[in-house]
Image 1 (cartoon, rainbow, N blue to C red):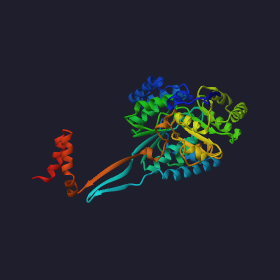
Image 2 (cartoon, helix red, strand yellow):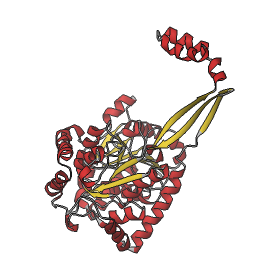
Image 3 (cartoon, helix red, strand yellow):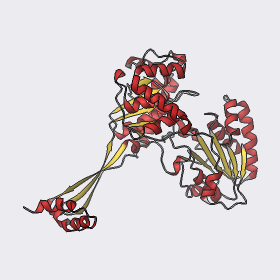
Image 4 (cartoon, one colour):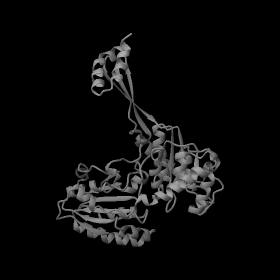
Length: 434
């Protein structure tokens, strides 16, 4: 991990934004390829999806839609320990997500004048669960549970065809889907899957969805950008990130372990330590080297930690650490300091925040009850992670009596005249003239 020394600098937020380490990824470079894959699916349906799986995933599935009995068999075949962990995660995420559903309210603005605020779920959602370097049954939970809590009535799930399973979806993914009662699952991946969700594939009975969620590679991100407007999306997810704010009281071994745990995901994963303690920085650097050397995915970890996206940032104090973090807008933020609550008060932007030595990001990945589908690439500065609210639309219902409308008739006429839209005022006056 390279070092960025900010101890003798007084930087503005704009200057800090230029200094934050980022992976060299550009969704735009995949746009042309993604556009072609989506167009192919729109033109040729299932045949296009089968051809894309053969070309991109190395296997041609027998069919794109998974039979319900295959999902049931996958549930029964789950390792008991894995099944128990999945069921506990489902329970915890469901409980925490319930708090995200707003209650409807009625505002009385006068006798017979009320505005009702209600929250309506979308009717159909498509979830994308990536394949590739790892298997993500936890992502099935993190996508499906919030939609179910929100009241979405129709859900579909897509995950790439797996060569080692003869072109089927990974059985652990199928098992997680089955535990959640999801019976509409498709063996399709990449940009083609996103296009299939957005536009539908009639020859396999796949109806278009209204929102598409879930992480993926740069082609998935590009496809989500292309279909936005046809369907809603959660975000254009990029490589995972962890930023740790730590002071001299932090345990260097734990900080290093957490940095390595995120580097394990991908060569482009970002691991950033921000500290006001050079001694801690040195200790973490030494321990990171040791852990990377013995890691199961050691080559991947070393590539991520040596990349331009990973760094140790030295600051003068914890206020400066918080300022740097806010400019970065991390997906995952850990605060390992003597008084983490005091640092939390300075934080504005983060996908999820983990306080203290006993709240590692790995907890949030699986069993904290929080959601792990979070904004990356600095998007936490203006967006949030996945939740029940992702699938809810606030609607205002206006309910006025004749008397209540007449009470504001003159004001409406005055404003419509001021805007040179007299028919607006006339539409109200017509209700009181014969």
